[in-house]
Length: 401
Image (cartoon, rainbow, N blue to C red; front, top):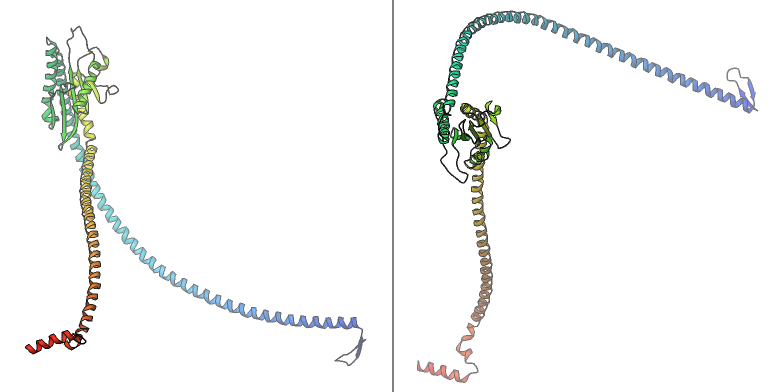
């Protein structure tokens, strides 16, 4: 048993071991709770202090932001007042500018109305001129048809052919100064293995050939027993076109006079032979104009191609010139390198000879030094020592002197 004296009343209390341990545990718990409560209170006080400090900082920060916002609002209000003034001034200027533009538009409208009246008058004049032009063309066409009928009235096949050729040549010469000032249209008199055609047409722009046409004219009398067809002459015409370096081929023909195909106008037979057409005589100038206009449309591209080819030729010539110079330099370099190598070998030989000569010279110098060192030994006394004969001879010489 354990005895414990109460510190307050002095009474002695007897406790067994289990009661004593329980009492100790109770005391320890009370002590722990007391310390926990003290720490909790300290933490709460610290938290309240920090919270108050943060609240104070937040209040100061809020007051600072409110002050800055008030300042910004004041600045914006001043700017707004200035903007109102600028807006009023801009509106005033815009109104003035609008009035000025309206005046300009009104003046433009008046001018356009005047231009419309003038254009209307010009259109009326142009329409009248166009009408007169078409009446003239219709009249000319009727005359051509009459000529076409006339040149078929010849008596012989030769006359018929020549009449068609003359018709085409005269028709072209009439239009040459106006429509084809730079063109060549003459008889093909150059006979080669393929024979010759009737006419060759070539047109030029800026000295460049734009288009070329080989012409064949075929005419026959209505009463002719042996009737030819247009296709009978396609192969020969194509060969003549190729041999004379022409781009297009045209057969001007009165053959197959009842054919709706050929009587309708221009017939494209390129499916048989490249770039070949068949026309009636009245469409002779028309086919030239159509082919020439197609060629003029591609003339710009052809001009660019020629310029590109010339440029490439210049580049090629330049490259060849550079290559020639480079080859010459390379040849000269190889020659110089060979000479350098030869000179280098010669220098090596010379250096070896000089080295040998230096060694020999040093050897000779050594021998000269040795000979020099032997000069004192050339005294008569030393030379005649132990030599009675030489002594006598030198004695005789001295006596004679």
